[in-house]
Every structure is written in structure tokens, then in C-alpha cells.
Image (cartoon, rainbow, N blue to C red; front, side, top):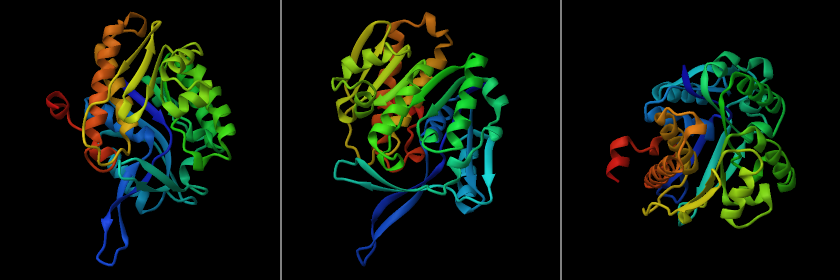
Length: 314
């Protein structure tokens, strides 16, 4: 049985790597896409994973499939597209290592995944099904996501959700907020940034927002806030975990790595969600905060995932 199957974008992150002698910016090719980052984290810590997505029949698609295989993520659900190219994203970093994105996705293969191309057997054979909101921005990927969610629910999967709001990929913030909010009740575990929590609830305070989100259906709500740490709500409790102190170089993928680490730790408990103790949930959150913090000391997303010895030592 697969531990986690995810559906969503798989793309290239072109990340800054300094400047050339003539002052031109240099970019390094890195694998990207929040679902892939999360799965790579789960795989790094011993989980069995699979990704349902679509990439171009181009050199970038070849590269990404090779990365999935090297990270022990099943490519059985990956579809190749001979018409649309692999999606690209160029990342800019400020002095604190925080990111802004420019996407080349209007004809990106990931948004052309059809419902018929969803590998339902992968989902039925999974403990956890994970999705984000980027597959909801366009058709036919949005309908593919709906089919996958129905399969996951009918199969008894634990459903996890990361909205992963990217303003450049939506017509406007109001449209994004409405769509993102519609899918919250599907999730049993949700990870949102502070901005996304406010989009969903209209509440600025992370503690109140986390509690409100749990009232919408999820059993566990995780609100990340960069260097301010994470606030979580579960079983009627709301608690805050400070960030792990590091000198951040690149925050790309840190939220995905946080969530992947959290899910991995929960799976290792081998307990039904109804039997989880709040102390066990908090332990998973703390380890995930540490893992994400360590990841920001390296460039890129998947390449920055720390191994278990680094997490245990750090």
C-alpha cells in the first residue's frame, strides 16, 4: 500500500545562483511543485509515495521524472503531454531568503491533466491523498482534482490539503479565496500560511483563524508564519510552536517540507486519527518545524530536504 498519493503541479523552479562576471543573473534548474516537494519529504523519511500529474514531452519533463525516481516517488501516475510544455517558474529571493514567483504556465502541461487521466487505483491503494489549490486554477485539471477527491473519499483515505496560494495564477484574490475556501471541508488535515488562513476565515490572528478552520471540517489545522513559527489547532486545543532558529538562505519549499515531515511523523505513529493524543500531534509539529527550518539553510526545495540524522542532530 502507498502511504501518500498526491495530485498536482510538477514544474521547474529556476532559482537564483548569483551573477555572472558581466552582472547577469544566473539561475539554477531545480525540481519544483508543492505536491512533489511534500512527497519527496515523505519518501526521504521512509514513506512510499506516488504523484499524479502531467509534464511535457520535453527535456524538463525528462528531468522531473528522473528526479521523482531518484527520490523514490512512483511515476505510475505521471502523464506525458506532447502538445503542452512542462510548466516553469522563475524565483526571486529578497535579503531574508523569501520568494516571489514568475510563472510560465498558460500552456503548462500540469493544467491539462484530464479526469480520465487520473490513476484512480493509485488513490484507492493509499493511506493519504494530498492535493493543493494550483490544480484548481484551470480546467481540465480542476475536474481531475474533483474526480481524485471523490475517489479518495470513497476509498477512506485521509485527505490532506495545502492551498499554496500563488497570486499570479489566479484572476484575482477574491476568486482564489472563494475557490480555496470551497475545498476546506474535504480535508481532514490542512496546512495554510497566515495569509491563506486570513483569506479563508477573514481573521488575522493565527490562533483564532486555526480554530475557525477546524470548525469548517478539518481535524487538524496548521498555520505557518515563517520566522514566527507555526500555530496549530486540534481536538479543541490551539497552540503555538516557535520557529527553529537558523540563518535562512532560501525558503523555497519550506512549507511543503514542513507538511511532508508532519504527515510522515503521523504515519509513523500508525494510529487512527481518532486515537491521536494532542501530545503526539504537537511532537509531530515540533519535528516538522525543525525540519523546515533546516531546509532553509540550503538552496532549492527537494535538494534542501535534510536527512533524518540532520534533523535528529539539529
